[in-house]
Image (tube, rainbow, N blue to C red; front, side, top):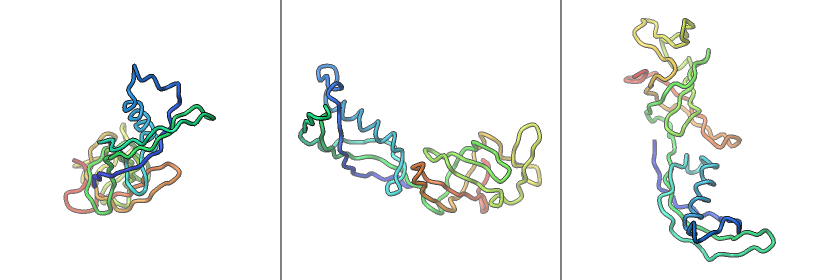
Length: 177
């Protein structure tokens, strides 16, 4: 995973009723607003998944909008983000077993598909607990198993605001851990 330190500029609006500077100083109000906005956004195609706000660089002068009862201002901030890359080796946790493959989660990335065609010598076993079992029976992948995998392809899903990732365990030192 590539970790990026990025600078972002955001326009913030804060309703008048949220401003109680005696109880909550303005920088905290701004930070809470930013955390809420970035948390809702989750990820972007350009930057990847937003992990944390590291610094507030500048806060512009406040502009009061009488019509909508809000205060407007621009903020410059630094943020840490993580972006998946083709070819990199990651470790994920099995979250779901399906007939045609496995869904994995790795850090903030929740849409990782490991198709059955990308796991040589593993077959779906529908015994007591559904799992993919290696033909020789010496290893398996079931829910909550840790798996080392290679990123095959990445697609940005605008509708969900996240990446769809295709994985493989074909290769040396890949598979269940």
